Length: 368
Length: 86
Image (cartoon, rainbow over all chains, first blue to last red; front, side, top):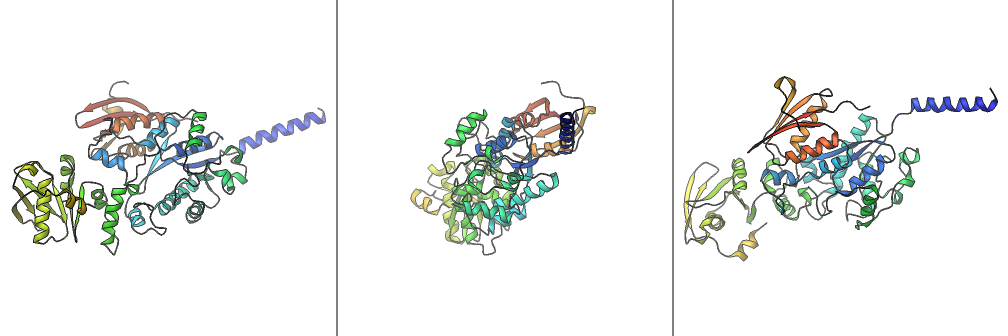
């Protein structure tokens, strides 16, 4: 055996030993179902990294409520779970992580970093989720966590400074990879350790999706949701108004799970310290019945109409207004007089006869 | 798709009646995780979107959707856990 043969043999042995000892590089990916998170998963997997995709369930999912209320999309289809669709397109298993409950509600009502345009405490929410992801990373022996975040895409949560805050406060400093903007950010530990090839990551920035769409085409990803989507009530303008209206009257800023559901349903009106919630259809009326406890229930008698719930202690004037509003939203709105039944919190029943409210401008001014 | 498996072949029933997206699939996924490869789970759901979710879930995770039964207010499916992939 020549010297060169020995060298070659040693090299092969070393290579074999390295392969035996070499553990797969693992990562936890956050899969929302949007194009960016899909691309992030495709890009990381393309580097041979074993990915465990997770999707966090917060209890504030718009699709969940739409389905509960039997709503359909404009084309008549049932609202779909975009994360599951994304997982199917990527042909990778995805795990739901349930983070709903009191801790998450406390985060929503007491965000350290404040709210976005609506009721969305996105920075705090990400920190909360990434802490959970970090625990999964450690339990699974993964080297890093990654997301589809793009620098500058969102005005609050995806600025350079907030990306750093999220990384720091979640305890993931150096181990939170944003593959789509990685080249614009400091190299992370997996990049420095050679587990992840920085050259095969990207430098996307801003709100334009052109680069992402081009990459999707390159990767053969053709079926992805439009960016206007999103499944979180906290980013919904109407929900946000109702949420802040409630919090403004509640110094202790507590929030129960059933209140979250009610914030997402019905027409909401504010009459001083009294709140009126009128179901928008029969399905909502049925759903409202489970929330009657602790509230006054009001509905028209003798004609079809919605169930309405009243929070607070309405005086005589407020009762007249509410009765007229409830009458207006039923089939009795064309009648001169409508009978309306009140079932008070105490169980007492009162019948009133009112003219349906007919001033839309006034109604609009009372809407939350 | 095949026929409904016999009761003796069903390892576990996940009754997700009254729950909505994503909980029926989340419960099914959790049940499958506890079972051996090849085990069959029966899923009962009243969420009208579950059939679509389930198709996506099985495609993603490579489980086998053996059979389904659609009734006016209820959807039942039988899912077989994928064989171990190593």
